[in-house]
Structures are given as C-alpha cells and as structure tokens.
Image 1 (cartoon, rainbow, N blue to C red):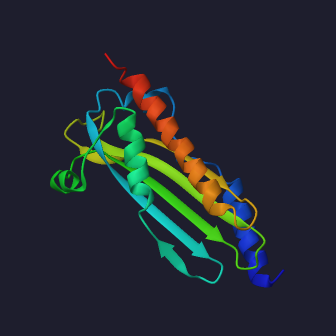
Image 2 (cartoon, rainbow, N blue to C red):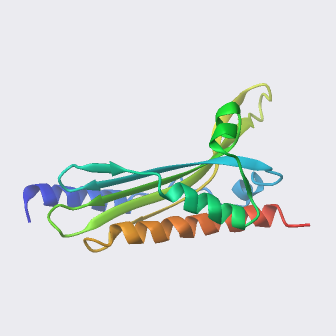
Length: 171
C-alpha cells in the first residue's frame, strides 16, 4: 500500500469515528416538520476517484423528488424555489471517494432541512437554520461505494418521509 493510500485510509478512519453531531432527528426536530406545506429539494452529488478526478451530477434529483411526491409531499419546482428566498429546502448531499489503490471506497450521505426560524429570546431575529437532519457514512470494498451510498441515501429519504408523515398525517 502506498503512502498516499495509507494517509487516505487514516483520514477516512478519523472521519468514520467522529461523532455525527449534525444528525438531528429526535422528537423536537420532527416537530419542526409539522404543518410544513411544501419545500424545495437540492441534490449535491459528487464522485471522486483516487486520481483526483471529480464527477458531479444531479441524476438523483429526479429520483428523490419522485419518491417524496409519491409519499404525498408537495415539492416546489426549481422556478418556484428561485422566486422564494425564505422557502424551506431539503438538501441531499451524496459524496463517494474511490481509492485509486483499489482497496476501499468511502461515502458520506446526509440530508438536512433548512428553514427560517426565530430566536426564542428575540422573535424579531430570524435566520435560516437546519431543523432536521440525518447522515450515514461507510467504507465498503472498492467498487461498491456508489451502490452503498445510494442505498444509504434512500434510507435517509425514507427516514425523512416517515418523520414528515408522522407530523403531518393524512386527514
């Protein structure tokens, strides 16, 4: 294993053992989904191979939007999202790093809902904030990263849908 591969493995190990402090999906976070009428969806998809080549794509955008719509959740179009600066946005981040030495892949997937909130101490102070989020990380065998990351991302989307529907039951 080359020095570069060893350094990448150490870096990934450190990332894998860090605490997922960004993940907020508890009863308080779920309650921020109550009465949410609609929101935009943004997908950030990145694949980097061990040679430093980067490939970005938004091919997951349609699949995620379709899954949310099939669950009965209203999604704003890109045009509607551009017109409304204070509109809540669900962001799905999908990153896969493939090791050039053919030893391992690494992925990080997360989704977060960002919406405007006001501070309890001063209701006049309004700011965008992440009110719901969840994430997964993994290090599958070389060549399996994209598939594992996509599976993990859709598990997170299911988690969001379940939380959303629990707070907004069909009447």
